Image (tube, rainbow, N blue to C red; front, side):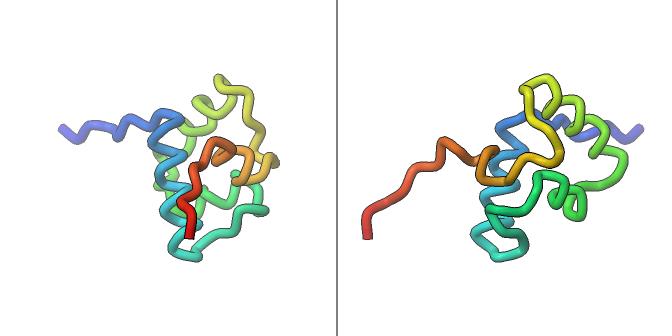
Length: 73
């Protein structure tokens, strides 16, 4: 039996940070852009998690990553 991956907001933030760092998505894209990288069966769970945390799919990725820490160069 296959178990579903548990997505919580922190996992989604980590995935978004990774994709931004890799250049696959930009910070100013809507959160919905992440759906290209998340399996469809898991996306529904992520939508519920986003809604529970008061995020909209049209909100920007940067809103999701608002608490990023920056290292000085």
